[in-house]
Length: 393
Figure 1: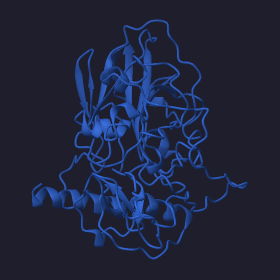
Figure 2 (figure 1 turned 180 degrees about the vertical axis):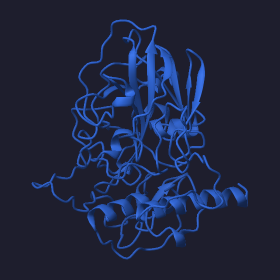
Figure 3 (figure 1 turned 60 degrees about the vertical axis):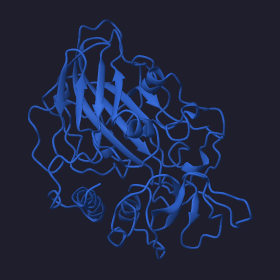
Figure 4 (figure 1 turned 120 degrees about the vertical axis):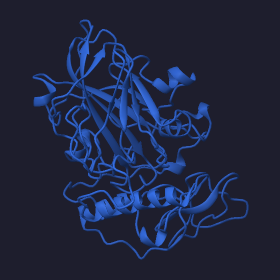
């Protein structure tokens, strides 16, 4: 990577950090408008063939784009609020629609998605009863899951998560089928990545939803079943949201994504399974490896962290990928599994991972999701222990 490219990536990270501290109005110096950080960059329709770009988050809305415009490259930090519907700033109804034949393929191109945010990839659909220009989708049980790829140990440790497949195998693209035979009309496709890299802290999970307005044609008589509300369905204490990433392994693959099962499959209901010949593992009836009790009151969410690593470091103990291996007050194992290195996920947590990040860590004092949590809940964090970073933030 060239120094110019590295500077651009760092500047974007600094921008995201600043956004969660209060927001900036314009794109950072040195970053070309349209930089594809954490959003869908464009969508590709197979039938009728067409490509629609997304508007840059820091520029004026594109009057021809059917993708609802976001106002940041960061996640929907408060995923219990209205930003979870279509992303931060993205819940503004627009006029353009992408014509899509029922049963055809829609590809969401995240372009240069290189953030190490392991987790599931999910897609929902909602019908716009009076046209999408008059529909926000933030009320009622309107969102029907049509596709999801969760954790699949059969793909190996590097490609087990849907996000890993997208990042490392598919050139930052993920495709879904509009349900075959779906009745004609206007709909919204809601596609998202859920990053679990800091999901061991309440409100730490990072959702990246994007919404595409479509007009289904050449359809049939299939209607949508009752779905789920967004906001309203992503509980901060859901074991698919509040989870220690390192505990989900090839040997312990039990994980169930939030939002319920696929209700009306688009194609197989798991594009990754259909394309790569394996199915994401899910064990809805099995208890999670570690849980946190929900408080009796729902006023302010406390900065709870799931217990993670052992308190001692016996000889021969190694830390698995994404497990904690250092950080302030940490006294557990520090030897990382073969093929991984022990570097920092953020200034408060050191973990094992294969991947590295180029960044000036003196300028990134806390991971963005924790910044958002601090802003939302006025939490004061412990003094950080400074370390290098190996997982994208």
